[in-house]
Length: 109
Image (cartoon, rainbow, N blue to C red):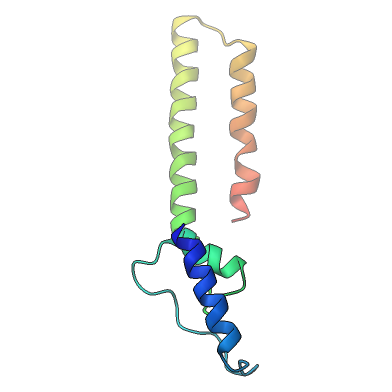
């Protein structure tokens, strides 16, 4: 509900404000403590004048950490299956194929 109030307040302020200069550039970044979802709602509605915050580094850290964990657990699963049963089943091959499929999209980031 708070986002709707902010949107209405910003729309009212924008309608009363003089037209923005095309060469003025970007506005200030969101104030500290502004939730990202609130910022995105304002940006989507066209009411945010500032630049979009860059979270690329954090995204890469999370993605590659999760790929590393997936690699560890996949290797442990294959080790356990081969050491206990001496073979792997079709579901293990599907898991391996999906693990291999992780890398092309992740390498383009």
